[in-house]
Each structure stands twice: as C-alpha cells, then as structure tokens.
Image (cartoon, one colour):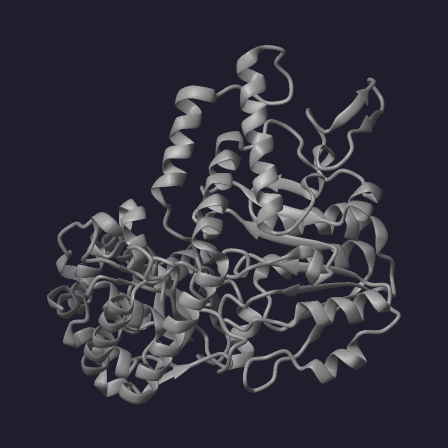
Length: 406
Length: 141
C-alpha cells in the first residue's frame, strides 16, 4: 500500500466525506487538490485562447497548454508532437476510426477486436465496417477471462488490417499482453490501436515499448477534469492521415473551395480546445508521476488481492469475474446469487458504498459471461484497506437482506 | 438499512420472487419491447385489446426487483381498463415516482413503490413497464 503519506488528504471530496466509500474509480476518478487548483488558477491568472493572439496573455495560455502536452508525452513515454488532445478515449477511438479506418479499409479487409471490448472500442468499428465493407472479427475469451492467445494465431491473417484491443478490461480487470499482440499484428502489416482508458491511470505505460500505433485514454479517469483526453499516435502514421474534424487551428491555408492542413498534432485539434482542462490534466499527470505509477499499480494490486481473498473466504455466494493472477488490475465485477446487480448496488448505496451496476458498456462481454448485469467495485490510489473492509461488511448485510434470492 | 426496508417492501419482494402475469400471450396481441439501455433491464409487454379495453396483459423480461415488481403489479392493475383509464394510471404512477406525489388510491398495491421517488437512480427501473405501456397504448390509438 502507498504509505509515504496519507494521499486521501490530497483529494478534497474523499477527505471531506469520510462516511462515503467511493468504489467507482473505473468509471471516473476523484480529483486531487492539485488538479482543482490548476484548473482554477489557469482561469484566474492565465486564461486566453491559444495559438492565435499576438498578445502576452495568449502566449502565456499557449505555453501552459503546450506544457501540458509535454507532460502528457512524458507520462506515456511519447514524443510531444504525437500527443493529440481530444475529449476522451471514446473520441480518440472515433478519431482513428474515421480518419484512418474509413479512408484505408476496403471490402475483404478485417478488423480484429476482442470479446472484452468496451462499447467505445466496438461501435466506431461498426460504423467503419458498415461504410467500408470491412469485416469485424473478435478474439474470444478463455473461461478465466483472458484473451485466447491460441485463437489469435488463426484470427490474425494477411486480411487483418487493424487490431484494436483494450489494454485493461473495465469489467474483468484483465491486463492484456498488448505488447506481444502488437508485435504479431505489425509483423503481418496490421495497424494496432490500444484502448488505454483503464491502464493509463493505473499502471506505468510506455507507448514506445508497447509497440502499438495508437493509444487512447481519458483524463477524467486519472484524476484530471472531464472533457479532455489523449490520443497518442505514431508520428509516421499520423502524418499520412487526413483530418477528422475541420475548422480553425487545424489548417495551413484555406481558400473558399479547398484547404491544406497543419501538421500533427494540430491537424487533429480543430476549434478551440479544452484549454484549461488540458492544463489541469497536465497537473493530474504530474501528480501521478510524483506518487509513482509503479506505486499506484502496486496499491491497486494489494487491495485487489485483499478484497478477493475476503470475498472468497467470507462471501462464497459472491461470484467474481476475471482472472486470478498478476495480470489483473483493481476492478472486481461480481454478482450475488440471483440478486440483480442494481439491487445489490442500491443496498450498498444505502450503506454509503458507491459501486456501479449494469453492463458497464460491455454488453457482448456480459452476454459471454451469461449475466445480464454485474455490480463492480473498483479501486484507486485513495482507496484504503478500511474501504474494502466496509465494503465486505456491507455486502454481508446485503446478503442477509436478500437471503431468499441466494 | 431503514431506507432499504422502505424501498424493498414485502409486496415488492413477493412480486419479484413470484412475478404475476409472467409469460407470453398468443397472437393476436399487441407486443411492445421496453429497454433501459443504461442498465440492460428489458421486458416485453403483451396486451390484448378487446372492445377498447385491455382484455389481457402479460409480460416477460429480466431486471432488478423494482422493475420486475412494477411490471408484475402493473399488468394486474390494468386488466379490464379502457385505454384512457390505463393512460390515466400511467400519469398517476409517474406522478408518484417522478414527482413524489401522494399515491393515488387507484394505484392499489403499487403504492409500495412510492419510496423509489427518493432514489433517483431507480426511477427508471420503476417506470420501465409504465413507459412501455404508454408507448403501446399510443401506438394502439
């Protein structure tokens, strides 16, 4: 566990509501004071539009925005010019789907996904398949909730033009071997997209070492503000791509009937961006790097092992999903006997425990698991062992209340 | 857990355990699907309209205790009602759940769901069957 100092004091909402146990960080994380302050300070002291004003304040704002890009590049081991600010991981994946998929795929081409994808990494590819005639295939899961790596050998062929895979599942917590997968895919000439929405906030990521072509993540799941996220793209690929959205900022020269485009990353940042949010996301990345991403991962892992052990021993009626082993992050999706996940979540909420219930934007995965919905508890750096204890005790009362449905 | 006891009243738990009017009506029948996309709760409502009245109402589906109990009780209540009477019940039920109005006497046992008004996250569960009924009846007109 992270013991150097009490990190909870850094999170005003967590520190201010000691009766509340927040176990929904996989949906969105709480914000450290450093982020709230960076957002507020930028508006109070440095705010202006970026990249256009000839006046000092605009240059100052531009510098803060570009510094945030530098910080985010450092956060994932990328080059600055490869970091594109978008709204969130969903927009990042849509950007790749529209700006690369729509332009480059043909009938007969294949897009390889997996059965554990979030809807954000399914629906954009449905659009592409519909438009281009490309075919979608999916890597199946093993009974343990891992990707069936043997099946990849047969699914990955010369027809595969693009592989898009989640780094860490938002339901199973599975950490996928995207490095190996990227290597295999690139050997066959396929482009590799990684949905890093759950991994970037929780473990050290180095996009160059991963070997993918794109890596997408959201700011709000890593303690940053809503409305800003990052698409990292390999520069050589970005350079070949047409823009996604047209407008101001992304152009080189505009005539009434045609235009030429700026180089990446500006080519993909049309219109006034979420300036203050990007600056505050930079503060979130600084905060996490200061804590150390290895420490964040270890903290999540320790809590996960502790929670799974207590659930196994004290609540055998609880069925948890996902693999057991080091390739698993701090996410526990579960069901309790025949009690619907919403009823479980509601009963936990009455005891001050916030968990999510539903299909967590992964309907195909829930279909595969054979349950219409699951409840989900997820951890982050401000979660404590005491939070897990309260969750377990609350679950015992839920079990008692719904004992007729077990 | 006091609010929990208030929400999950015995009536609701009974209907969840033993849903009433659960099953399929043979054709000719007015069949309408209802889904809460955010949570995956889903049901199918079957109505047989005879002489402007709901002659028979059945349903099947899967979801939480609140959505299932609501469908179970609703299908019992609307049998024999005219379309305007049924729509009036829809209005009264939603007033209770959404606006927190006093339960109308016509709602009978459904007043057991009144506490759901305090749980904003569950309003959609309680109203799923009723929104489906409203859509079905508007389609029937």
